[in-house]
Length: 218
Image (cartoon, rainbow, N blue to C red; front, side, top):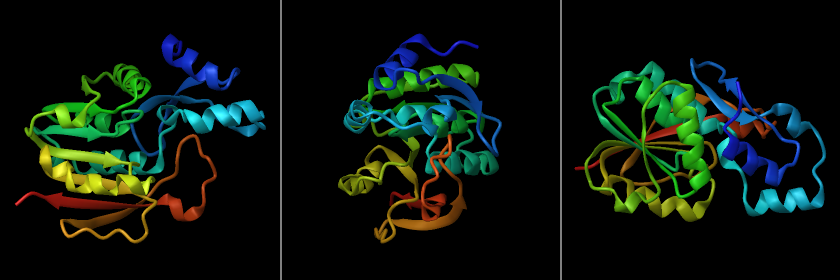
C-alpha cells in the first residue's frame, strides 16, 4: 500500500527519510497513515529539529487523547449514533473516523492545518468512511448535536475555546491528558481513560491518563 503522495512529500520536507505507513491502532479496528516508528529512533539534525518545532507534523501521529476518545466512542456508540458530529482540531482524523464508524449521521472534521485535513481525507479513505471537512470552526452553523475534541488543550492558550464549543453544538466531549487543574463550570469529568501516543513517543506516564469531560448547553 502506497502512502498518499502529498502527505509523504510534506513529511519528507521535514524529515528526509521519514516514511508514512498504514498502521493499525492498538485496541481499535482502525488504521491510520502514521510516521514509521523506526524514524523516531534516530538523532535529529539541528535543522530537522528546527523545522519540526516550527511546523510540527501533528497529523502523522495518533495522540493519546485521540486514541482514547476513539476507543471510548467504539464502546459507547450511543453518543454519536444518528447524530451530527464535529471533530474540532481533528489532526489525523482518528476521533472523526471513530464517530463515523459508530454510526454518526454526519461527521465534519475541522482543522486549521491543510495537511491535517489532507490526512483526515486519506485516513477516512483507509477506513472506508465518509467525512466532510472544514478549516474554520466559526464559519460553521450552530447545527451539530455533538462537538468532539481531543489533544487541543496542550496549549493553555486554547482553554478559552471551551466556552466556544457549545456555540456550534448542543453537547461537547473533550479528551485531554495535559491539563491537571481543569476547572470549568459547564464541564464535568465523565471518565479517566488510558492510552499512549502512537507511534509510542515514550511520553511521561502521567500523559497516558486521559480525562474525558462532558458539557451540555442549557
